[in-house]
Length: 188
Image 1 (cartoon, helix red, strand yellow):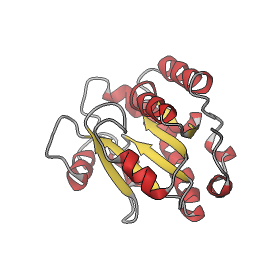
Image 2: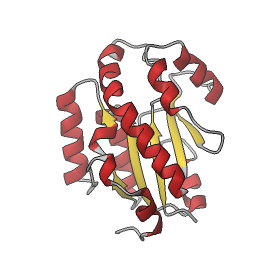
Image 3: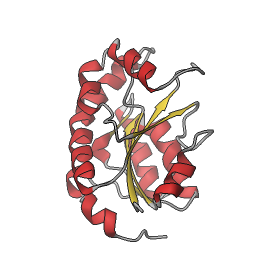
């Protein structure tokens, strides 16, 4: 039973939309931080769960999304955090990783009660996933240096809301010890 899981949200991304270049700037800042956190989470034995948007393509699957990302502006970043064979990969149809996906069932099967959320966009998909996680009683860690949005002010506001309303711990990823989180019981 794994009490903590790392979620990587919408980072396998071709950025083929109007605000893509703005989001690319944020992804440049957070990708090395997420890669570092993922290495430490993996070393501690935490499950890593990728949650990615289906981009409106209802026949999407993991390899298709990776291929589309390969053709996009962020491919050099995506390569740094590609899923490993043992990682989980969930495709979502809307903003929240919980909405119309098997995420809740997977977390229950893993015995997860604490989530570390990372990814883009902080003010949309990370926020909506965090909200749904909070409503389900999960303890949340959302490292501020692992979350980006198209507009920095929107990201800052989302982080403030996640801290103040959803009781998320938003300290930087270097201050989070995945091994310590694995053994602790969640605060409910």
